[in-house]
Length: 159
Image (cartoon, rainbow, N blue to C red; front, side, top):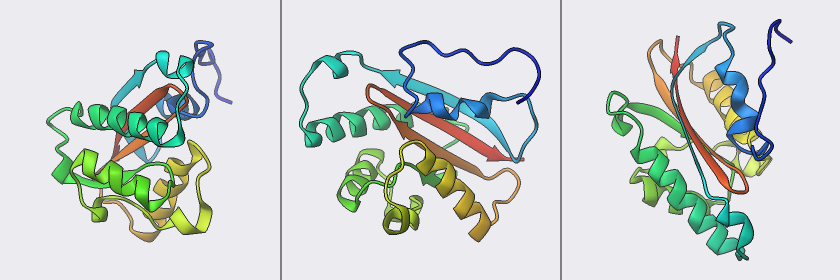
């Protein structure tokens, strides 16, 4: 644990979403620099009764909004990869349509091997991808996270 004040999260912060990835905001040096961070939340998402498909559809739409809000200095066509939860291919394809990207943009190698393990998916996928295909300095990647009522998007650049 690094010295100094510890991060404090609002009690509504979803530990299954970007809250679980807040360590990226650490002042300790590392392999990646945080270039963009955005979140979206919808508390009404908790008060409604959703079937699985409606929940997924709402999540995909919120992730699409966050993707489109990435600053123009990090254009989608320059992103090396997109990392998100290891959801089934039906959900992945829906997300690809929403983001208007092709399958080659998504890291899908762990989809069958691991399945979905919440926010850990993006970190495991980023680590595995970087081990298989070393990222060049300056390369950027996008990570998308999903919680119960909160969605996150962050762009990392290789140092």
